Length: 169
Image (cartoon, rainbow, N blue to C red; front, top):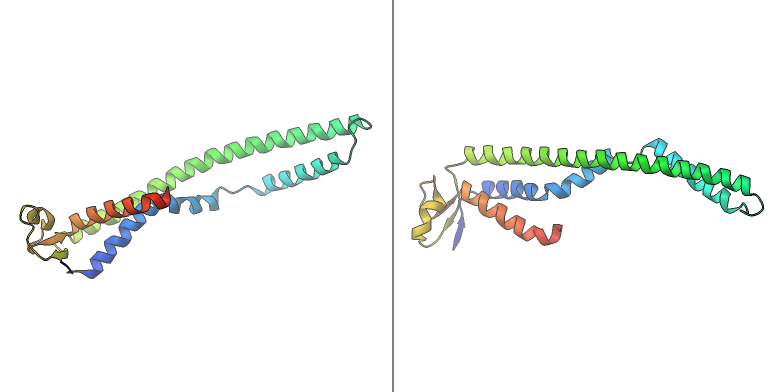
């Protein structure tokens, strides 16, 4: 029923379309490398944990002044950490958006250039006659009952995104 005419292009476009469908998943590990907590933030977090341990050893009733002083330091560190975390999250969202757009554009340009370059190459030939659709499926190729590069990319993109949607969601 189906004969592969150009196996290289079949696999090539399958890989490009898979990368295109997986860009949102690929972006997360890339951004994680750039938006981790800074050394100062980690040291402030460690200091906060130490202060909380020291505070647990102090009786609030017996040593109220020391307990209050530690509580003020803890509150100050917590507010600084909260500010740093919120600014890091906003930067992370900006980086995620930028990387996502750049990767999608790069993959789309590769696909577009490849489709234009290989526009006359048939990818797959169907056995049998699909009379009303055969002209649309093979355009601009001259091979009868063939699926052209354009149509193959559309079919592959749609199929992969449909198949991967439940897995990636």
